[in-house]
Image (cartoon, rainbow, N blue to C red; front, side, top):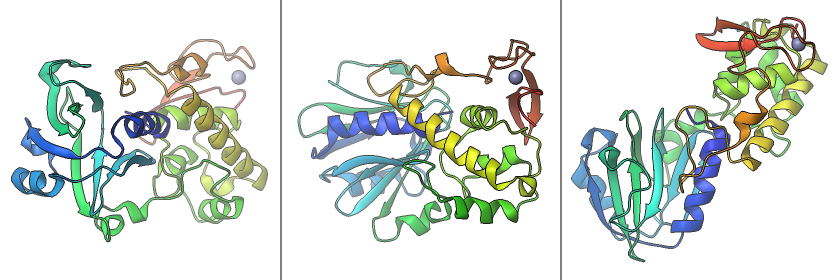
Length: 275
Ligand SMILES: [Zn+2]
């Protein structure tokens, strides 16, 4: 599932391709993906709207129009591309939605598993209605503050793995980066969050920032099927220290990386380095 770095990569790519273009025509081949309204209503709302920019907040990919905000949830396998009508960057059988743009190109959405959704809201109240206002800050650009995370952590009886996956605490971290962040911070994923020291909270903040920045620079992690908008493959998978490395040697201490279900997710860690 794409996390912040992968969605950011897609947003940057799409923004370059489609900002300031208008939508002339919309075709939807899988109506259930339109989350909130009827397909015809959706088509009417985006018709002739100019895409002002494409951006992301955490895992949320957003197309900003003059009056509307269209939010795309990629879920497991959703992929966007921009191409001429007759060219498909991904498998044509998985094409679910396409917009004809004012420069003659097509903005296309593919989804092999059909879990992805699209919703569109008035710009005035999309934060509230989409549930996005409940999201915590993205751990980038030295945000959030130490005090913010310390206050949240002090009240939490959750395991630290669950805590950093909680999108209302930090937005954009999924399983892969949670595993890597806890390794970088030398913290065992089953620690109770409120037991963390100030120093450890600082280490989590620093590791989140560094790992997400690095992953964005490498255009994300390509493990299952993720590709950026032009079909390019991200490279952060080459820098994973624990994720998917069960029984391999820890790069720091040489002991075997362990895999265990923690907070319902496949969690990889080093018993020696993380405590
Ligand atoms: Zn180790």
